[in-house]
Image (cartoon, rainbow, N blue to C red; front, side, top):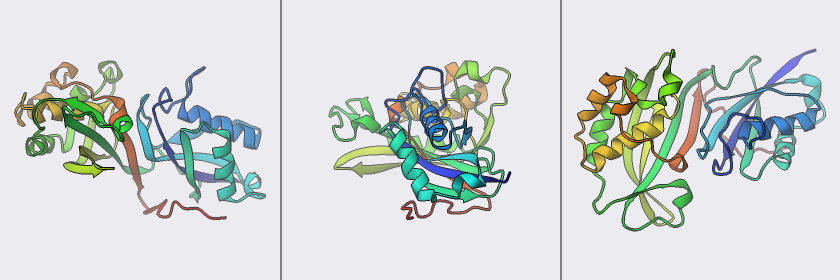
Length: 271
């Protein structure tokens, strides 16, 4: 029996979920997607995602792959499949598009690079409209974006990022990763000013991006100098870095695949 590989472009509000990966008895994004596929196709359909996200982390461009039998797509369009999945999942998760990809495609292992964006704001005024997706850094002074940008440069390139991940998750694991770029810039959303930290890399460790952001905030607040980050990297010790930034400010933004540029260029799918 012939199989067909599909990829789904998925967005979700991470607040109600206990992370992406399925866990027995808990609400998760993967659990919701696989439960919907089980109902539709009357069998278990394993899925693979581009990057697991922790509890409370959001996504606007998560990619999830699965293998179907060709007969299972013979009487439905890809758009109708997306509609069926959305009708069966929690309101906090939404499949924006389903596409057919080369057989054997893996959302995780075929990824060329991944992009995360973290939003934060500072000062005495709490953000209102963007608060569910923003880390409010309570402070009487502004964060120094220039200093944060200088500090971020130390994190670019290939390094051992053991200082930037959950300590237990690094035991016996390879913690060398490559960060292609980190940009720190101002952005206004719905009239509320904030700072965005955009991180692009090949792969990331558990809580790596959030720890990088927490470390940059230590610099932006004036508690540390930008060159301190080099010291943090060299120590390979989680205790050397800054705090882990809250989950709600982080969004899994985009994934790019070699040989499949603009895989979801038009996310407005039609029948």
